[in-house]
Image (cartoon, rainbow, N blue to C red; front, side):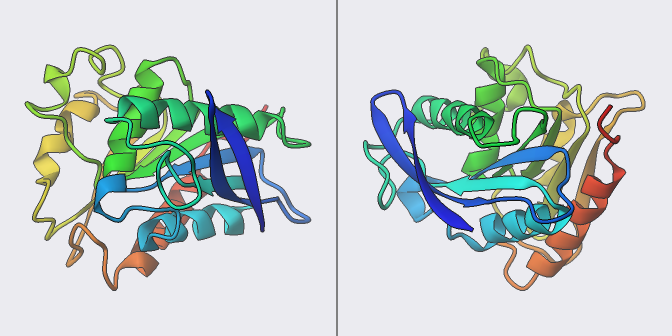
Length: 218
């Protein structure tokens, strides 16, 4: 694992990068952290659990700090800026040796989950998606003009929600899923709250199972 810095427009952001080991998976992954204005950072417990699951899988994985957080330059970007940061992080991974042949997985927790969807609405096209307790836009996903073209999700996706989440009821995630059979699924974890305290092991297990279910690269 190594500390890295990369550009997002005129800003320089910091991150933690894990290079694949002896048995690399054909996957590069960007992980987006929770709300920058409420203590979210790359060191968040859920972000670290996602990172660990991806590293164990053999992915090239990057967790990073949004603009204005810790050593990343700039200030809060009202989710539009953070969506651009995610796009920049994905482009940075393309420059890492051996990353060019890898498929992109995008992961985000809470605010980071919603920012990931906004990054997709702006053209980022991951081959797989993991959202953990994603933040819901005011009025719901279908009320967002920017998100309407990517809803429902059309790629393999895992949405994880805590049964005891006091912020976002898991039923509000249904617009992200197709009515018919779909590769996107919602998993509600018993006894987990929005912060996943004491439940990161279950989270990591669910993500690992999802990773192992992904189609192999051509």
